[in-house]
Image 1 (cartoon, one colour):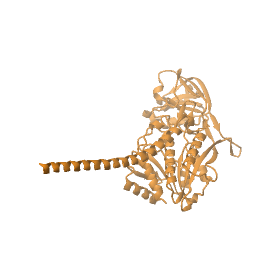
Image 2 (cartoon, rainbow, N blue to C red):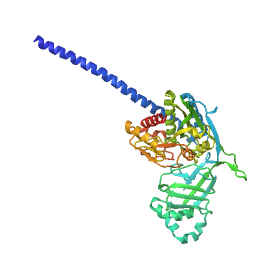
Image 3 (cartoon, rainbow, N blue to C red):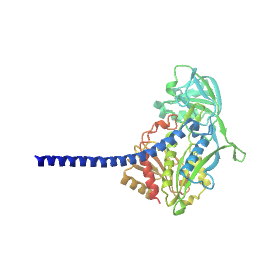
Length: 451
């Protein structure tokens, strides 16, 4: 019995020892896992902090009302300074001027006595001039516009109209008549009905008419269309007889430098635009979370990493303004480069970093095939993202003028379902950051591989 007891005792002790050892290694593994997870989480936490800050009301949609762009630029500069990025030629900012239409005051639309909600029920054309109207407006159905005799009627000569040409059901067949109607110089107010999502933009021009896009469900086609409209706009920019611009709006690009350890004459440039559409009146703010506070969050994360891990090449980080108004900030930089364009080894432009469930698109990927192969090889080996796709040249973000000037570059945007674009719902709380951390790792490795 003693031998048996002895064996049991030994077995029990061994079991206890084995269990303790497993718990020990398990706790280490869990600790390592927590450390890795927490490290990635910290990137996302910092990104969330940046997203929440830039989308908060004090930045007014990072447009050109209430100095939203300037406040955002100052915040980004503070982040550059805190991270340890250096000034470029003695400054973090590169100012430039451009014409732009803004809506700092009243944007009020009432329909049959009901106050409509800006951005939800309607949007106005970004180039809209100041405009006031009170009265009834003729409703023109698709059938009216397809009837050639309609244009000879008294109602057509009215200076304002409601048209039904943007109903999805009639979109294709309404195209030509709609174009004729919309370009009629006699119309000073056109209200067009739509079943589509309300998508706004920015304008460097001011139109000679007011166009309001109204959600179809708001409008009753069987009732009199009585409207009260008050719109206040301010246009920045005047031209001399020689076409020279003055009294324009002053915005700024924000730059920060990390010096390289070896190749001080060569640069890898990482860019993202920080501007968005701003305000449409005093109540409708377009936060621009995915487009493109998320890109700024990625840019700042990369800056933080590479400050701690210096590279051979210089790293120049640029946050552009004026992108939404026509790539104006990046175009200005290309025409007025602070570091010579020929010294740029490669440029990476970042936009729309909110999802990534379906991978990443590399604009110019089919143009710069060698660099694209580097990118795909990294992703294949590390399995960071579900897909790395390529397309050719496109004038759809701030890489474009660099590319046209001969600078090798990619424009990255993450793919995946995200319904909010250029609307009031592109809020920080809506951004899932599905593959933000893995996209960061891919971009990080790609930048390192380019050295």
